[in-house]
Length: 254
Ligand SMILES: [Zn+2]
Image (cartoon, rainbow, N blue to C red; front, side, top):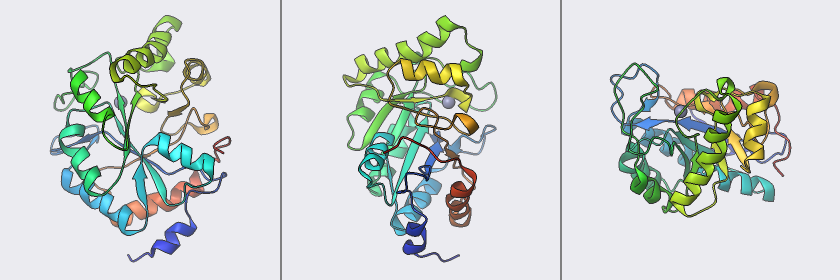
């Protein structure tokens, strides 16, 4: 399938009515045993980033994307997000992002520093970044570090104390760890309701990423697209175009 940069730009992300196109990744590595479909191979990520760049698009962090929206200058920009803070982000994803001159947002779990994805019972254990790794990511040009909560719990099932800890404490801990304010939050499992959105907003986050937030869609519940190992050029193009048709408008981005 051949598509010109112009035809994609015409369906770009600059209109305030258009929800930003935000890709959701998790781990980058060996995806031979991947029951939750959270892994893309380095080769596939390389191809996907190359696909974006060839079409005049560039992946950026969420803060850069939202700042560009606010200026009316988000034309050709897409958000790239990596959930959970896997150690392979620094080892594998970061060099590929560099190669394609892309930025990204990494959502980490400051309650599981140097731990693993214990919340996923099936599949391989995947190591998470420790303090040093998170600092290294945060210090990289174009890379933003946001919070994914403390320990990866379904916040819609959390009582008030746990919700507060996961949302507000994770922000404080992460800010201390990176030495910078933390503007972004990402809902574990993508599960979200009005109470959880209110807690995230009250904790001072400037935006939050969900997956399919439906009527909650807004700056604190941004929809994202799962991008996986099977997403070749044709599927990426479909996801890029269908996004505009399926998603609700996001108000208040500019
Ligand atoms: Zn997660």
